[in-house]
Length: 346
Image (tube, rainbow, N blue to C red; front, side, top):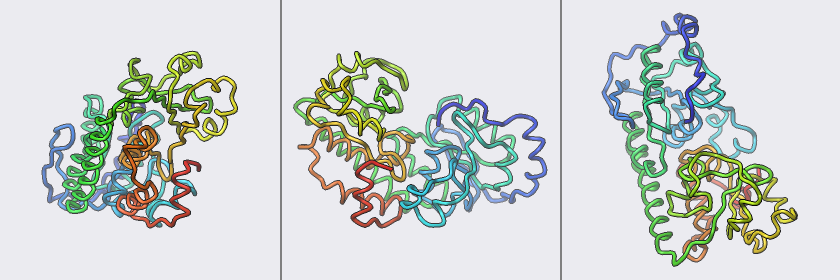
């Protein structure tokens, strides 16, 4: 979830959608559920069709109730489809209600006939207002999930209540809570911390500043990244700044940067480059660090721990990957697929 500007929820959309609204199913039987923002949402007794307001929500819904997911904010591509359920991963692109570049409007939303709209991310007043407005204009219940990594277990419990999938939600919530607790305990035992830099973009000079959603993984685990002292969001820094930080570990999501950094004379003096500790994070079917910032980051907790503190994270990543994909994405991976996921390439 990002910014709600330009959500397409204007008067003309409401007028265009008037006819579509008539075709919505009746919701005679409802139950009241408190969402992640503390709002009371009247949800149908049976929830069978759910519209995801943005990419994080789509992944939350896919992992818990894939059959109820109407579609994806962005159509999944070939490499991604391989790691998703057939018939679900290739459901249509429906656009998004939140974030920059919003691509749906009230007419499209109503024509999809959802029983429920779900968004996952910030629960600040801006997003509460958007949810209230959409709900009032369409008559479709709109629930917010707290998308913070540390709130994942509670989010699954809430989503299980909203969708009626409580038993499976409890399993996923336990995995999330146990994983976050374990990785935090291990990082807290580390006698010292290496200097860690998160590199984005083909030249590696985009990074997340302190308290940015882009580096929430690091901060939730207790890993102190070198840009933590600079507050803000995603920012571009200079090579001189990176050289001054001299990171001992570099984590990146950009394949071009990972392939070229060792031969780039500007980066040769950086400790992480000299010692070969530049790591390309997995991204199939979704990123393990922040792309998008959803429950897809859970296996990234183990992966990131193993790269920053290898002695404290001895688990076999191939086994962890296979188990996570089986439980959350509901697909069975063969060894070659696991290897491709862990390689981080498309």
